[in-house]
Amino acid sequence: MGWDEFLVLWCAVWGVLALVGYTMALAGVTGAQRTVRLTGRIEQVRESRHGGSRKGGIPVVVTYRDPVSGQEITVTNDGERGEMITAAWEGREIGVSHPRGRPHAYRFSDRPERPGRGLGRPGCALFLVYVGLVVLAAVEQGWPWALIGFGGPCALYAAAHLPGTVRARRERLSGLAAMESVPGRVVAVLKDVSIDQDDGHTWTTITPVVSFTTREGTAVTAHCTSHLADPADAYGREVTVHYTPADPADFTLDRAAEQRSQGQDVTFNALMVLVLAATAVAGVVFL
Picture: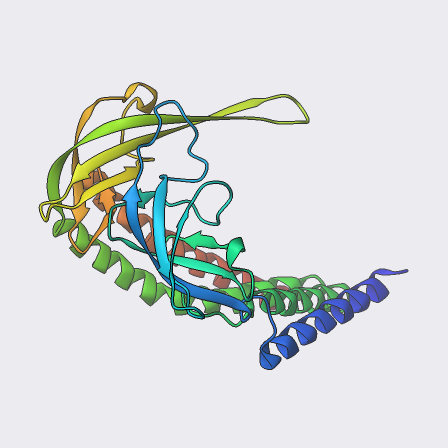
């Protein structure tokens, strides 16, 4: 089988998968559409064990109301339960979901989620069809078509998202300036060790746990993964926490460093637009 035949087969297979995915979405039978999504409420925040694992996130007790029976159900996040809860306080609303008819298979998300349509996988399959078509054009018509096919659409996509990135930076800077500051304390340091099965290399992940009380009286426990010097020896350390009053999960230990880093996303996005546009132009020149 030559490259032409392989690429045609590639596009056909991924095209069929994309068509099946979009058909299932229209019929309302994708996994996302068959998932029941609810809003849960944290009723209790349990203590994180110093030296333990971060797997599972902050241990919490959550209640939610079953839409079928109307009964209030109480569950915990023990074991593999979806996203890690990395910031918790009593009364916080989080997302709870489970497959239709299987409430025991519940999973958590950091925030309540809207119902989805399951278009992610068919969209990815459609993108792979496009990749195959670009490569096929490059094989048959010349390699500059690869520069045009990838650089042009990607440059347009990045350019369309650049204004949103600028707005997000402006909003983030405004939010950082409005943060409140309160004292906090590192109440635990979690340690996870993983071993590469191929070469035996060991990775160690250190996750400090910070506890602080907002000015509104909300006691927050959260993982702190940045802006803390020497995290392995941080147990018991007093820190200053800057948090957003409307959402204490949005906090930092170094507001100035956060402010300095906000320009990086905008700069990167702008550079990507320039590089991708230059790639497409180079393809046109070399035709």
